[in-house]
Amino acid sequence: MVTKQSGIYRTLNIIGVLILFLLMVVGFSVYLLPHFGWRVDNLSSGSMEPELSAGDLVVTRPVEPEVVAVGDIITFRPNIADENLVTHRVIGIGQSSPLYFETKGDANLDPDPFTVPALNLEGRVYFHAPLVGYAIPFLKTTAGLLVVLVVPGLIIIAVCMKSLRYELVKTRVKSQGKEAEEQKRE
Image (tube, rainbow, N blue to C red; front, side, top):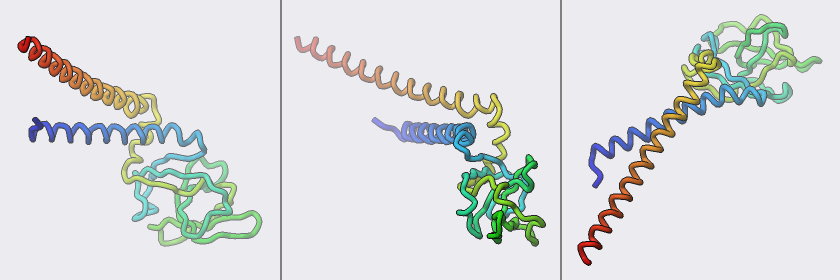
């Protein structure tokens, strides 16, 4: 018999496992996507609001410069030696050799005071998740790896083992009940 309390408990278990699974997907993304040339970063400024905000997780996909179009949001280095990345919208494309982009942050009044050579292009923004970017620096550490991959994995295994144990006990009780009935009949 399923009670209201056991239904709520089952629903909370499912929601909890889904949250842990999503946490693991984010963790895997942070570690695996860069091996395929993709970038997973957090935005540090609000220059792209309202589309993108400070603290958003941004996944940038590598693309050929020739496929970038006006209106795309790209991630680039202001100059090739710069470690800092900028994520802004393309507002113009210079077709002269070499190819370059004119960019602007959505929240900025003026375009960027520089052009972006195609060589400085890191990629086009493919996906973003609000506020998740705040966790990226932590997720890139060993402790972050443990928190988002190992701990949720162990919790999911424990929940599955508990469910398996419950089903085994239930099956054992049923079989013992059938044996007791058979012995009474004899």
